[in-house]
Length: 457
Ligand code: MG
Image 1 (tube, helix red, strand yellow):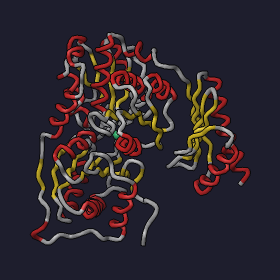
Image 2: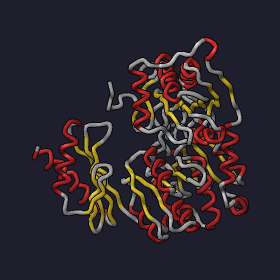
Image 3: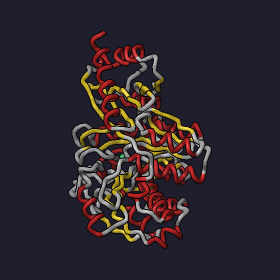
Image 4: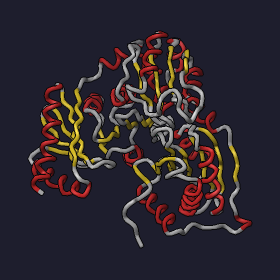
């Protein structure tokens, strides 16, 4: 039977509560399903710092070798370090045990292809089919895979990041003071070292690995980063940087203590990268700010819009041969290094930008185009979402729109993105304009379009 709907994999792999949804038994069966899908060769396995990481990693490894594939266990590492390791060690694929920004009780599985990018939805569906139909391969006793360990993967990754920093002399001369908050997880193994080796003076908070996340929860938000803000201003640092649980994202605090939205720091990196490489392509989801497009046009560059989700951005970067990608949640894809979001690389780029400009992060961000955003939501039963969006498209067909993910309606002085949520029975209306009043008006218009469409059903 061909299944069309994924049941286990979401936008970024499989997620659930450890020992409830994600058990050791589940991981053995899923590990062997993943190995059966890949067919042959060796898979790299790594994990973030959660309390269930060793148990679940051991189970995934048992499943993989039982299907006859080899394992290279690289242990604790950020997701981008594992992604970098795949082409570096030339293996068939990889499995990362992480729940990224989810609360401490969660864990999960991300499956990575040989190019370092997460596998496609079709491949996830193929793995689920093997899992549900119990089609896992069981190797003969003398064909069981070998388990090897590799302790240098994080060092290899750190060195590779430094190679891609062009402002090393300027960073050394600027003597930047940086506060790093890796949320007691694997970012602690890389970012403080990279910045210090580049010549920054580094203070690390929440720097020991502890799966209970005693310092803060793993999602970097203005609320969870209050301590980082205080320390940045308290010690007079040039900036602060915080990661999520697997350190593929980076959120920055400027020297005045303000936690900056991810697309503003992305826009700064975009300006820096395009000033050296004009006439290029920048990939970003439809939810990103117009400032990304405005900066691209200043450098004769084009925006490639994608659905919201890091895998879509990575795949578009490869397809379009783009130099850069970014998301509003602090994911930056610097494809000269690797086409995946990478927290430590992003931290190094911001250090380079601040050092080269001789300006503060606050000043640099203030020079970017200014926009205002409003996010609203309204309820809508999941089964009605497809029809509702059809009606909205029909009712707004006189407007220019981008319909990759919901519909983004473009007006002369702003836009509104109307999108069904992937996880809740709601529609989101996300608007942006040059004034707060206009953004509010557009977001409310988005909500009224959803409500009118539901009445028409
Ligand atoms: Mg993450």
